[in-house]
Image (cartoon, rainbow, N blue to C red; front, top):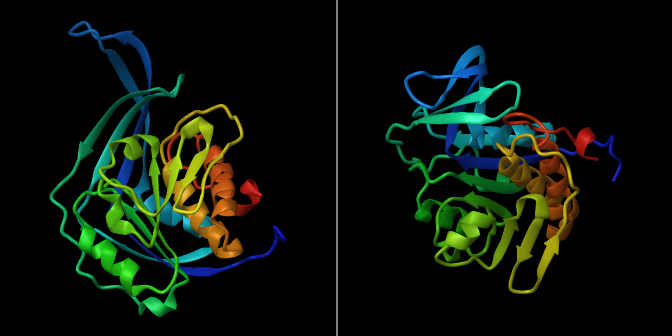
Length: 254
């Protein structure tokens, strides 16, 4: 594929979103009140997280995404030592989330694929996702924290190794990310592992979001789930070399 070619797909992205807030600071001493570090904050910034981070990754891959998400604000606040990059603490502020109304911007025929980024915060139910799979005549890619994965037969279900071990049932077509060991494809027809390039990992935050977006993009380009997994491995290996959420471009990956 010509790396300079600009390929544009239309994707429907549905999922829970949040704000990722980073408090970066220096640690020079322990608190006299308890054996915990004292963080002197030198910088604070916000970036889109969860499904919003998937959206940014899709945009960087030249995909036009209609994004349907919750309006209720979720904030994940991280406190990080600037010298080591170590996460000292994360504080989550999660209100009760209003469920999806079922409304989408355009008829499903408008889209080349559906991407579901389900952090199981209350925006999407099993029935919501099942209806999308049933009603859409095209590929559906699901990243979910739900455990009954058999309910999502007919879609590509992407989860991490911990979620795979905790699952109560399995879908027909599953991609399991394995961190430094790459990813595993488990389906009715094939079971295979795909290694990834060894890199210096700085932060794994957002790597799953990058993998999901890159998997979708390359599948739409090649119509091959195997090639899509290899491409997603490359993309997420770039993300983990950065602090916080990072959405690589096509040029960086290719």
